[in-house]
Length: 233
Image (cartoon, rainbow, N blue to C red; front, side, top):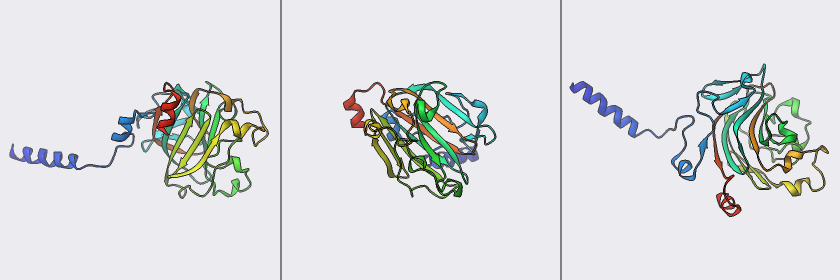
């Protein structure tokens, strides 16, 4: 009985001193602000679409390099702040679709934030609007802020009204107004009706690379007024 009591006390002390969060655990600040998790760390619950193209490995949503495809959130969002971590393999290519209609093409019917290994030789001659963090075809991102291949990167995407902001590892790499960016036509010269959408799904866009995502959480600002959304920035 005495040994059991001692073990219980030790376990309680260890638990009380624990500061490392579980993979999908929200911080106290995020909980207070109203963030919600998009991934439970164990399954693809809450997602739809190409479920056969993704698996959960190492506590992360992992794109099957033999299948891939588009994985849609079941819920739609209009204004939001999305936070996540991602890990790229050598030559990795994926994307995060914003305001995408069900079954739509993320890059054109919605908007796609590139998730890309900028250092790969095969991507050396891409256009500026095709590199990591860019709003594909519309707004180019600053380069040089990805961690080395195989390391976890942190990223925040703010999609509020007509403004899209991407913060990679603490550095703002995109901060643009969609109306201004498309005033004279998108940079790639193609039609992007999705740039004018006000709501839609968030999408993981698998392109045949084993890209991983974890700690996916969102602050849904869809029902807030413009002033509240601005304050959340």
